[in-house]
Image (tube, one colour):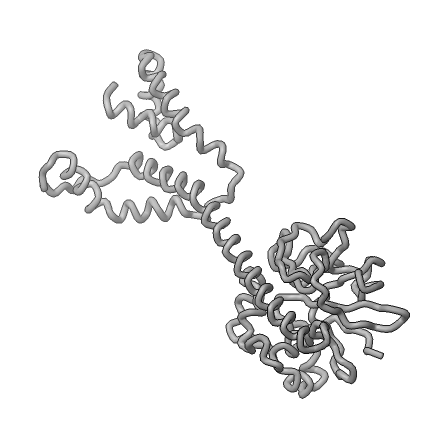
Length: 323
Protein backbone atom coordinates (compact mmCIF):
# COMPACT_ATOMS: atom_id res chain seq x y z
CA UNK A 1 0.00 0.00 0.00
CA UNK A 2 1.38 3.44 -0.95
CA UNK A 3 2.08 6.12 1.65
CA UNK A 4 -0.42 8.46 -0.04
CA UNK A 5 -3.24 5.94 0.39
CA UNK A 6 -2.24 5.41 4.03
CA UNK A 7 -2.40 9.18 4.64
CA UNK A 8 -5.83 9.28 3.00
CA UNK A 9 -6.93 6.47 5.32
CA UNK A 10 -5.95 8.53 8.38
CA UNK A 11 -7.84 11.54 7.09
CA UNK A 12 -10.83 9.35 6.23
CA UNK A 13 -10.86 7.84 9.72
CA UNK A 14 -10.72 11.15 11.62
CA UNK A 15 -13.09 12.97 9.24
CA UNK A 16 -10.46 15.30 7.80
CA UNK A 17 -10.30 14.05 4.20
CA UNK A 18 -11.57 16.01 1.20
CA UNK A 19 -14.62 14.61 -0.68
CA UNK A 20 -12.47 13.38 -3.56
CA UNK A 21 -10.07 11.75 -1.10
CA UNK A 22 -12.99 10.00 0.63
CA UNK A 23 -14.16 8.68 -2.72
CA UNK A 24 -10.67 7.41 -3.50
CA UNK A 25 -10.41 5.69 -0.10
CA UNK A 26 -13.81 4.01 -0.46
CA UNK A 27 -12.85 2.68 -3.88
CA UNK A 28 -9.57 1.37 -2.48
CA UNK A 29 -11.34 -0.26 0.47
CA UNK A 30 -13.78 -2.00 -1.88
CA UNK A 31 -10.96 -3.45 -3.99
CA UNK A 32 -8.07 -3.98 -1.56
CA UNK A 33 -8.19 -6.32 1.44
CA UNK A 34 -4.91 -4.89 2.78
CA UNK A 35 -6.46 -1.41 2.80
CA UNK A 36 -9.37 -2.69 4.89
CA UNK A 37 -6.96 -4.33 7.34
CA UNK A 38 -4.94 -1.11 7.51
CA UNK A 39 -8.08 0.89 8.28
CA UNK A 40 -9.04 -1.45 11.12
CA UNK A 41 -5.51 -1.26 12.51
CA UNK A 42 -5.63 2.53 12.52
CA UNK A 43 -9.08 2.50 14.14
CA UNK A 44 -7.92 0.15 16.92
CA UNK A 45 -4.85 2.34 17.48
CA UNK A 46 -7.10 5.31 18.23
CA UNK A 47 -9.52 3.26 20.35
CA UNK A 48 -7.71 3.93 23.70
CA UNK A 49 -8.79 7.56 23.45
CA UNK A 50 -12.41 6.45 23.90
CA UNK A 51 -11.76 5.17 27.42
CA UNK A 52 -10.77 8.67 28.53
CA UNK A 53 -13.94 10.36 27.32
CA UNK A 54 -15.20 11.08 30.86
CA UNK A 55 -12.32 13.39 31.63
CA UNK A 56 -12.49 17.17 31.60
CA UNK A 57 -12.89 18.83 28.21
CA UNK A 58 -9.79 20.66 26.94
CA UNK A 59 -9.99 24.46 26.79
CA UNK A 60 -12.16 25.83 23.99
CA UNK A 61 -10.26 26.37 20.77
CA UNK A 62 -7.16 24.43 21.83
CA UNK A 63 -6.97 22.35 18.64
CA UNK A 64 -7.49 25.42 16.46
CA UNK A 65 -4.81 27.38 18.32
CA UNK A 66 -2.43 24.44 17.93
CA UNK A 67 -3.17 24.24 14.21
CA UNK A 68 -2.68 27.98 13.80
CA UNK A 69 0.68 27.77 15.53
CA UNK A 70 1.79 24.75 13.48
CA UNK A 71 0.67 26.48 10.30
CA UNK A 72 2.67 29.59 11.25
CA UNK A 73 5.79 27.41 11.41
CA UNK A 74 5.37 25.75 8.02
CA UNK A 75 8.43 27.50 6.64
CA UNK A 76 10.56 25.87 9.33
CA UNK A 77 9.15 22.46 10.22
CA UNK A 78 8.70 20.88 6.76
CA UNK A 79 12.19 22.00 5.77
CA UNK A 80 13.68 20.52 8.92
CA UNK A 81 11.79 17.27 8.50
CA UNK A 82 12.67 16.97 4.82
CA UNK A 83 16.35 17.67 5.48
CA UNK A 84 16.44 15.15 8.32
CA UNK A 85 14.80 12.49 6.17
CA UNK A 86 17.09 13.03 3.18
CA UNK A 87 20.30 13.66 5.10
CA UNK A 88 20.78 16.98 3.28
CA UNK A 89 20.50 20.61 4.28
CA UNK A 90 18.41 21.59 1.22
CA UNK A 91 15.90 24.31 2.06
CA UNK A 92 12.31 23.18 1.51
CA UNK A 93 9.42 25.53 1.12
CA UNK A 94 6.53 23.05 0.87
CA UNK A 95 3.52 24.19 2.89
CA UNK A 96 1.62 21.69 5.00
CA UNK A 97 -1.51 20.20 3.54
CA UNK A 98 -4.88 20.39 5.28
CA UNK A 99 -4.58 16.72 6.14
CA UNK A 100 -1.22 17.22 7.84
CA UNK A 101 -2.61 20.14 9.84
CA UNK A 102 -5.69 18.12 10.80
CA UNK A 103 -3.50 15.23 11.98
CA UNK A 104 -1.31 17.62 13.99
CA UNK A 105 -4.40 19.15 15.55
CA UNK A 106 -5.82 15.72 16.38
CA UNK A 107 -2.56 14.75 18.05
CA UNK A 108 -2.55 17.98 20.07
CA UNK A 109 -6.15 17.41 21.14
CA UNK A 110 -5.36 13.83 22.17
CA UNK A 111 -2.41 15.02 24.25
CA UNK A 112 -4.67 17.62 25.88
CA UNK A 113 -7.32 14.99 26.70
CA UNK A 114 -4.71 12.84 28.45
CA UNK A 115 -2.65 15.50 30.20
CA UNK A 116 -4.99 18.34 31.19
CA UNK A 117 -7.10 16.30 33.65
CA UNK A 118 -3.92 15.03 35.32
CA UNK A 119 -2.50 18.55 35.60
CA UNK A 120 -5.81 19.76 37.00
CA UNK A 121 -5.89 16.96 39.58
CA UNK A 122 -2.31 17.68 40.64
CA UNK A 123 -3.24 21.33 41.22
CA UNK A 124 -6.21 20.29 43.35
CA UNK A 125 -4.02 17.98 45.42
CA UNK A 126 -1.41 20.72 45.91
CA UNK A 127 -4.10 23.16 47.10
CA UNK A 128 -5.57 20.53 49.43
CA UNK A 129 -2.14 19.86 50.96
CA UNK A 130 -1.43 23.59 51.39
CA UNK A 131 -4.77 23.99 53.17
CA UNK A 132 -3.95 21.07 55.48
CA UNK A 133 -0.61 22.68 56.32
CA UNK A 134 -2.43 25.92 57.18
CA UNK A 135 -4.72 24.05 59.58
CA UNK A 136 -1.74 22.32 61.17
CA UNK A 137 -0.13 25.72 61.79
CA UNK A 138 -3.40 26.98 63.27
CA UNK A 139 -3.55 23.84 65.40
CA UNK A 140 -0.02 24.36 66.74
CA UNK A 141 -0.83 27.99 67.57
CA UNK A 142 -4.15 27.13 69.26
CA UNK A 143 -2.58 24.29 71.26
CA UNK A 144 0.22 26.60 72.41
CA UNK A 145 -2.38 29.19 73.38
CA UNK A 146 -4.34 26.59 75.36
CA UNK A 147 -1.26 25.64 77.35
CA UNK A 148 -0.99 29.21 78.59
CA UNK A 149 -4.72 29.77 79.12
CA UNK A 150 -6.01 26.98 81.33
CA UNK A 151 -6.46 24.48 78.49
CA UNK A 152 -9.01 26.64 76.64
CA UNK A 153 -8.95 27.39 72.94
CA UNK A 154 -9.01 31.05 71.84
CA UNK A 155 -12.60 32.24 71.85
CA UNK A 156 -14.85 34.95 73.25
CA UNK A 157 -13.72 35.99 76.72
CA UNK A 158 -15.75 37.57 79.56
CA UNK A 159 -16.34 41.25 78.89
CA UNK A 160 -15.65 41.02 75.14
CA UNK A 161 -17.73 43.56 73.23
CA UNK A 162 -17.53 41.49 70.07
CA UNK A 163 -18.82 38.00 70.77
CA UNK A 164 -18.25 36.43 67.34
CA UNK A 165 -16.64 33.06 66.61
CA UNK A 166 -13.99 34.63 64.35
CA UNK A 167 -12.35 36.49 67.25
CA UNK A 168 -10.13 33.45 67.78
CA UNK A 169 -7.96 34.63 64.88
CA UNK A 170 -7.35 38.23 66.12
CA UNK A 171 -6.69 36.73 69.56
CA UNK A 172 -3.92 34.50 68.19
CA UNK A 173 -2.46 37.42 66.19
CA UNK A 174 -2.56 39.82 69.13
CA UNK A 175 -0.70 37.36 71.33
CA UNK A 176 1.73 36.55 68.47
CA UNK A 177 0.83 32.91 68.01
CA UNK A 178 0.27 33.44 64.28
CA UNK A 179 1.59 36.20 61.96
CA UNK A 180 -0.78 39.01 60.94
CA UNK A 181 0.08 38.68 57.23
CA UNK A 182 -2.86 36.32 56.87
CA UNK A 183 -1.26 33.71 54.58
CA UNK A 184 -1.90 31.00 57.19
CA UNK A 185 -5.57 31.96 57.23
CA UNK A 186 -6.23 31.62 53.48
CA UNK A 187 -7.16 28.31 51.83
CA UNK A 188 -5.51 28.41 48.37
CA UNK A 189 -8.59 26.91 46.69
CA UNK A 190 -11.07 29.33 48.31
CA UNK A 191 -12.37 32.58 46.88
CA UNK A 192 -10.17 34.39 49.41
CA UNK A 193 -7.07 33.26 47.53
CA UNK A 194 -7.45 36.24 45.20
CA UNK A 195 -7.19 38.77 48.06
CA UNK A 196 -3.58 39.96 47.86
CA UNK A 197 -3.61 42.24 50.91
CA UNK A 198 -5.55 40.07 53.36
CA UNK A 199 -4.38 40.34 56.96
CA UNK A 200 -5.78 39.38 60.33
CA UNK A 201 -6.42 42.44 62.55
CA UNK A 202 -5.50 42.58 66.21
CA UNK A 203 -8.17 42.55 68.90
CA UNK A 204 -7.59 46.28 69.45
CA UNK A 205 -8.09 47.00 65.73
CA UNK A 206 -11.37 45.09 65.71
CA UNK A 207 -12.68 46.81 68.81
CA UNK A 208 -11.90 50.21 67.27
CA UNK A 209 -14.21 49.60 64.28
CA UNK A 210 -17.55 51.40 64.11
CA UNK A 211 -20.73 49.33 63.75
CA UNK A 212 -20.93 49.57 59.95
CA UNK A 213 -17.29 48.64 59.39
CA UNK A 214 -17.49 45.86 61.96
CA UNK A 215 -20.42 44.28 60.11
CA UNK A 216 -18.25 44.20 56.98
CA UNK A 217 -15.19 42.79 58.72
CA UNK A 218 -16.75 40.08 60.91
CA UNK A 219 -17.21 37.51 58.08
CA UNK A 220 -13.50 37.84 57.21
CA UNK A 221 -11.87 37.87 60.64
CA UNK A 222 -10.67 34.26 60.40
CA UNK A 223 -10.13 34.10 56.65
CA UNK A 224 -11.09 30.81 55.02
CA UNK A 225 -11.51 28.84 58.24
CA UNK A 226 -14.12 28.24 60.92
CA UNK A 227 -13.37 27.90 64.61
CA UNK A 228 -14.78 26.32 67.78
CA UNK A 229 -18.22 27.50 68.88
CA UNK A 230 -18.22 26.06 72.40
CA UNK A 231 -21.18 24.46 74.17
CA UNK A 232 -23.99 24.99 76.65
CA UNK A 233 -24.09 23.42 80.10
CA UNK A 234 -26.85 23.99 82.67
CA UNK A 235 -28.06 26.90 80.58
CA UNK A 236 -24.66 28.60 80.59
CA UNK A 237 -22.21 29.07 77.71
CA UNK A 238 -18.86 27.30 78.10
CA UNK A 239 -15.59 27.76 76.25
CA UNK A 240 -14.15 24.81 74.29
CA UNK A 241 -11.15 23.08 75.84
CA UNK A 242 -8.17 21.22 74.41
CA UNK A 243 -8.52 17.60 75.54
CA UNK A 244 -6.73 15.76 72.70
CA UNK A 245 -9.78 13.88 71.44
CA UNK A 246 -9.48 12.21 68.03
CA UNK A 247 -13.15 12.52 67.04
CA UNK A 248 -13.62 16.16 68.03
CA UNK A 249 -13.29 18.84 65.36
CA UNK A 250 -11.91 22.19 66.56
CA UNK A 251 -11.02 24.05 63.33
CA UNK A 252 -11.92 23.38 59.70
CA UNK A 253 -12.60 24.90 56.31
CA UNK A 254 -15.39 27.41 56.84
CA UNK A 255 -18.92 25.95 56.84
CA UNK A 256 -21.25 25.79 53.88
CA UNK A 257 -24.87 26.84 54.17
CA UNK A 258 -27.01 24.98 56.71
CA UNK A 259 -24.25 22.59 57.75
CA UNK A 260 -23.23 21.48 54.26
CA UNK A 261 -19.74 20.95 52.86
CA UNK A 262 -17.39 23.90 52.91
CA UNK A 263 -17.27 25.96 49.71
CA UNK A 264 -13.47 26.03 49.90
CA UNK A 265 -12.95 22.68 48.16
CA UNK A 266 -16.40 22.05 46.75
CA UNK A 267 -16.64 18.34 47.58
CA UNK A 268 -15.41 18.21 51.17
CA UNK A 269 -13.33 19.92 53.84
CA UNK A 270 -10.09 19.66 55.76
CA UNK A 271 -10.68 19.28 59.49
CA UNK A 272 -8.29 19.82 62.39
CA UNK A 273 -9.13 17.48 65.25
CA UNK A 274 -8.60 18.00 68.95
CA UNK A 275 -5.57 15.67 68.91
CA UNK A 276 -3.77 17.93 66.40
CA UNK A 277 -4.27 15.74 63.32
CA UNK A 278 -5.81 16.96 60.07
CA UNK A 279 -8.13 14.82 57.93
CA UNK A 280 -10.13 15.40 54.77
CA UNK A 281 -13.84 14.59 54.97
CA UNK A 282 -16.11 14.25 51.95
CA UNK A 283 -19.12 14.90 54.20
CA UNK A 284 -19.45 17.14 57.29
CA UNK A 285 -19.81 14.11 59.56
CA UNK A 286 -17.06 12.86 61.86
CA UNK A 287 -16.63 10.01 64.33
CA UNK A 288 -18.58 6.80 64.95
CA UNK A 289 -21.80 8.76 65.59
CA UNK A 290 -21.43 10.74 62.34
CA UNK A 291 -21.73 14.09 64.12
CA UNK A 292 -22.04 17.04 61.76
CA UNK A 293 -19.11 19.33 62.56
CA UNK A 294 -21.09 22.42 61.48
CA UNK A 295 -24.29 21.69 63.45
CA UNK A 296 -25.02 20.71 67.04
CA UNK A 297 -26.96 17.57 67.87
CA UNK A 298 -30.22 19.50 67.55
CA UNK A 299 -29.23 20.22 63.92
CA UNK A 300 -28.73 23.91 64.69
CA UNK A 301 -25.94 26.35 63.85
CA UNK A 302 -25.38 27.03 67.53
CA UNK A 303 -23.20 25.99 70.48
CA UNK A 304 -23.06 22.28 71.25
CA UNK A 305 -25.62 20.75 73.60
CA UNK A 306 -22.85 19.41 75.85
CA UNK A 307 -19.06 19.20 76.09
CA UNK A 308 -18.91 16.28 73.64
CA UNK A 309 -20.88 18.11 70.95
CA UNK A 310 -18.25 19.96 68.91
CA UNK A 311 -19.41 22.66 66.47
CA UNK A 312 -17.29 24.61 63.98
CA UNK A 313 -18.72 28.05 63.28
CA UNK A 314 -18.32 30.70 60.62
CA UNK A 315 -16.41 33.84 61.57
CA UNK A 316 -19.47 36.09 61.90
CA UNK A 317 -21.52 33.67 64.03
CA UNK A 318 -22.52 35.42 67.25
CA UNK A 319 -22.06 33.62 70.55
CA UNK A 320 -23.92 33.95 73.86
CA UNK A 321 -22.06 35.93 76.54
CA UNK A 322 -20.02 34.10 79.10
CA UNK A 323 -21.49 34.06 82.64
